Length: 108
Image 1 (cartoon, rainbow, N blue to C red):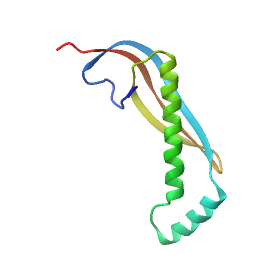
Image 2 (image 1 turned 120 degrees about the horizontal axis):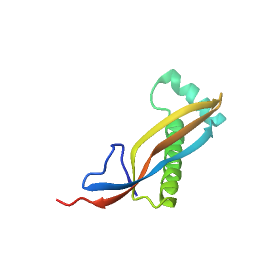
Image 3 (image 1 turned 120 degrees about the vertical axis):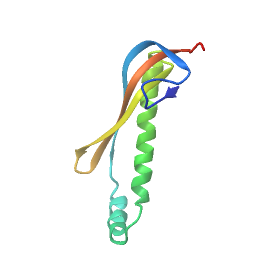
């Protein structure tokens, strides 16, 4: 599956737009990570526990979006964007969305 943040796929022509596809996940913070993060804010630097949590969440949301596009028979997803929102004090939603399309190789 081709996934692009731009509105086209170089070398291809869009032959059909299938609609919006999305993926989402809501993750909550882990108490152990919160304690480690509190100490890290005193010293400064990367809070690796949260980086790992966000990376894992992003990958899951992407996979869910790709699965939705595959069910529609898409070749690619264009115009991909990420977003996030706070659901509860200790939980965050990460979402990704784009437009599922069918492609053909460009002539020329």
